[in-house]
Length: 366
Ligand SMILES: NC(=O)c1ccc[n+]([C@@H]2O[C@H](COP(=O)([O-])OP(=O)(O)OC[C@H]3O[C@@H](n4cnc5c(N)ncnc54)[C@H](OP(=O)(O)O)[C@@H]3O)[C@@H](O)[C@H]2O)c1
Image (cartoon, rainbow, N blue to C red; front, side, top):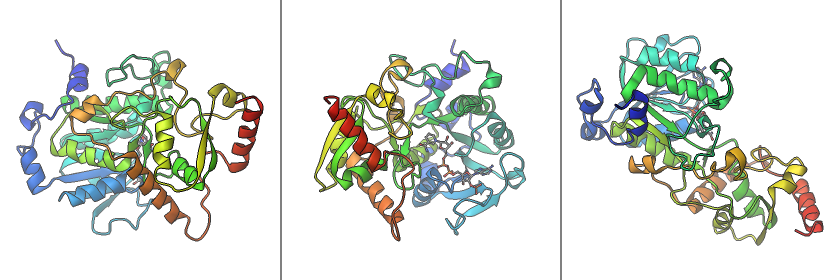
């Protein structure tokens, strides 16, 4: 006997409308040929605009729902409904869409409200979750069946980002059952990424010189390009797929050395890389994710953080751009931010700290 949760976990296959009990009689071919109506909860931040552009290019009709605060200049040709998903969803009442993409849900309260309202008003509800639902990365195979949530805490205390997303996923599952569609991305990178966690590397490498890279050259690194993610979303909806998907790239294992030298290929600046081990950096309070984006030491509970399994997503149509394309496009976008003055990155080592750490490392014999 397969439980509903197991079914959803295993359902990473293109499934027909009939198999999933969808209200719509339009199958994948009709969805592609005639286009779909898609509501995006959010749509004007980072992922949203890429999803909108790709969906419009595929001939779909888009409605955006948000508060009308972020990037209001975008998409004048697209229908925009205004409301606050925490308190006021009235603009969504009485409407119907083939599919909903929920990019802006972080808590079970928010997601429960929209799921309750939209359950009878759409065939599919794609929820943007996160790799952070896995708080322990020690499972041998880090696929969608690996444990999620902080098992040792009572659920009333699941308020941090990852645990709250676990509860939000559950709200989708409670409403949509076997039609649940959840995507769990790792760090999302590419043009428009204001976290700068990836952007630091092409920018730093293009500046040349001796470059400090954290950890070991063999450390595994994973991320997803925002355009690959957006294309995957629309593909999942066109195919009427249900299930839970790690949408983690790249397609083949990538070490930090391959990342560094792969990005170096797009620049003509003379560079050398010096790997500085994690313990040395930790002793000097240089923490992963903050100063040193964007991978973790592959040990302790992060053992397989950089080895997430994406085979279910790949079987459902997830594809990956080459690293050089991602790096070049990201750098071009970043340079466009610098027009009219230097742009200060949010993450990464500043040049004085990097030089000091490298000098100390060499003094210590590294
Ligand atoms: N960045 C990463 O590396 C990463 C990794 C894994 C998962 N994620 C997930 O990606 C999602 C964020 O994506 P994004 O920011 O790129 O999404 P987005 O859809 O591009 O932008 C966020 C949107 O939410 C709207 N919004 C915010 N608060 C709202 C509210 N109370 N009511 C209605 N609309 C609201 C904003 O517009 P207004 O301000 O105008 O309301 C904006 O349109 C999150 O679910 C996050 O967990 C991100």
